[in-house]
Image 1 (tube, helix red, strand yellow):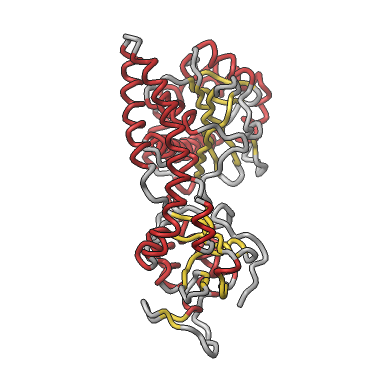
Image 2 (spheres, helix red, strand yellow; image 1 turned 90 degrees about the vertical axis):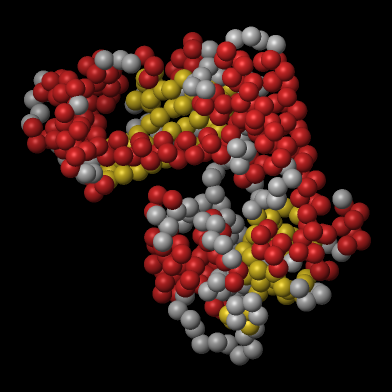
Length: 436
């Protein structure tokens, strides 16, 4: 059996394409070792599968992804547990889950209820709309407190453990990817079958890591308040341009915008882009902090929520990445990053009609007249337009991911309590009763 040398939790990141190409080779069915145990449900040997396996003292076998050997700890799918180990899940796991989930949900629900009652005392349309949306979320929150999470982390005390069997590192990575991409019944599928299912997922929809939460994550009610602000369009939208921040709502003229960009040391960006240099041109590094200029603009609008967009260009490679960040002013007055959504694209993604539409855009024609004053050629400007299309595609992808994350919060699926995998302990029943 393989030794678990590091914690292969679902949050570890890895290149999806690289991993699948490696696994196609590594998952070729090896000669069966002597004494290989069969899975009665699918007639597969342990080495045909990708899940790790734990055997309890009473002979119960469970399959999942091990994240620790001492103490033995596995990430398990709750659907698998309910289908294959119903009594164990109902009697010894579910009570611990309910205690954790209901405690967090009730605390958030109480905060929402206080805000709803405050808004109901006001009589303007905006307050009524906000109270109505928060009431819907409040109801979902209480309902979801009784719903089972997709995964549970189970720590098995030594008194309960007979044996822990680990797969090879390649197979364990496939198991992790299968969990992240919600492959059903993965505990009873061969590794080759799982790889094929993963390959069939459209690339933009493939997941290689759980959504990351900032170190100073806000409470769930702050996520809800920010998502409601976005849904009701009560939010300040800003663009990070070099060292400056541009307010989208101000709708500056194109000439004014380009002048602002050039003034803020972005002339090198334009020159590199139009001269087709191979160097990657990066905007100011993505930060978890909201720039002071952005804070001033948001406070002038009296908005506690900000959407800050930034981009990264690599003209030589013909690629671009766009990032959208959601900030919210929390109870302590600090601006906290709640989520980040990123999209990327290349010139290979461009369609001919997309280039034509960009060229005929009135704003682009105005840009052309400004750039013409810099003495740049038509071919160089056309290349710049292509990069504009690439940014457009990257922005569309980032916006789609961002909108999905906001919807997940509105439906309570994207709250921190739901994204974090609950951790419970499988101890002797006498001990466990005492812990509850």
